[in-house]
Length: 252
Image 1: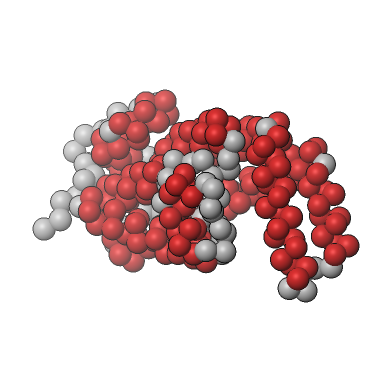
Image 2 (image 1 turned 135 degrees about the horizontal axis):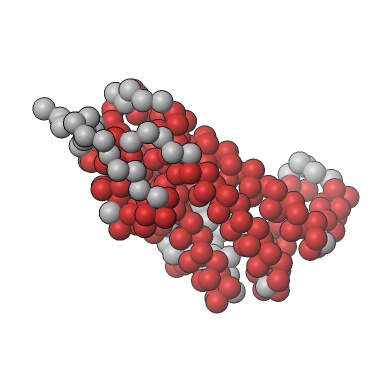
């Protein structure tokens, strides 16, 4: 018989976001036992969301002020546009206009922040929706979407730490692929058209860590064993990684 981790015998002491942020890194089991028994707190996802927005702005500013990283981004964009011109997907004039646009640091910064924030927002609110639907079907989770959003939001604290580590590594090594994962071993030979390279680059230490913690959270709020939540979380993540690898998103 599966043990339900939620307790109704006594009120649960709800800790501050700061305590929760530390616990998601050091004691996720304890954290999610609290989350499972306590009411949803919007700060669990709102604060990580706004911190991620700030980090995106910091990263884009850093890229525009590091000549090597900026040139690397421009070179990769140029290669992609030449490929589209060759495939008839865009004209040479459009490619030239795109290159001119990218070379404008102010426009690059503004559009980069907007685009990256949009993608992050879709993931931040879309991933919990997928996890919620999967948890209802597989783990028989009876709660609402906001509880899973809380689980995922707290786990993104790990992703925030990973972004900071990646930013430091990229600036120290002057490479967009100097990241804590498989991309680190492919810095000089990385090929976005290679599925294997993209898949290996997706094996980021912090992404794997976050996926495990999300699984622990899903199990806790569903009253299931940790392994069940982790298997579900990893299964969904691997589906995403495979799809992203086909699209050339491995180290993004």
